[in-house]
Image (cartoon, rainbow, N blue to C red; front, side):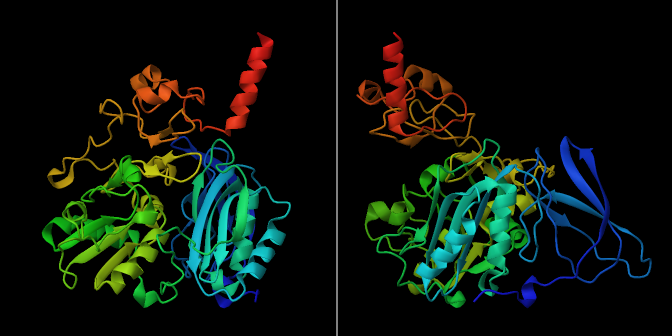
Length: 437
């Protein structure tokens, strides 16, 4: 049932004037508030240079009763905020929620009806266990969907992650449908107790996570990267072992039995009752899912980074983090500054003797890679996602190996941060070139 709830209610505010100020080459909006108040409905404003903003403030001074000055900074939208935004800047929005949905097919129909006419591309999956969404669009449309969703009491406090999409849509089209598993895992996840918070890992706020990371070397603790190896390759927290996983579907931490598997499993020989397991992933959903599996296997002290790495970078900056963040859309990679451009924290470098700073290597020649961004092999029948130095890109024509350079279906080498389009588009271009000759 849809309707407003107490979590969504807030006192109205009055805006008398607004002006744009420039600071550190980023535009900020400032608003003067006429009246004091105990609660606030947050308004997010977006600019062409910084398309993801939210509100920060101090407590009102009841004694002075003076006009309050509010300043918007790049951030994650708070769960209790409402959003007003006249801009057409593109953003990417991510959120998920495990909650019982009695009729997910009817829920899908409601979402499709609301999104009709909105310029939204992405993946939005719904089933009996909840919703998982990643989509892009003009900020006005993208945030209208968030506000509509939060009118439902089941999603009123949902944590929403927002990042810029400077080149427009980050997804080719909209896929909004029922899906048996909100994330892909061998054997599915419908049997897992995801709706029971006690079976999932304890969420840690970014500030608490940062504190725990600083204590890792002096405590019985494991930092577990619940992502794929290629994600770790371009960015990770200090102390996290590279996952020997190419697809989350095949993740098997904590259940290794062969000697080879044990050697690459960070949880193979830990004390299940005494060891603290600090789990992290991009946005949090993979940790929530896999923590229920670990809980069933007897691991007692499970903790996860609330909101994932993206939420951490927005709140704490790149402290204890090295590299970029891999994202599953056309952008592929985002620097920490994308989540908080105003943060002046110097990126983490060699804390406590860590030796993995120069961690990113070319897949082909193993030279250090300066651009922390993957590319797909130009051979469409290979399509391997790999890191590559510019010399090897040129020598192998965008392919991952000499064998692929002679493949029958080769795409052109893409300059910069472009992503490959559908094969037929390159075939049509080839035919047009042949006709022109």
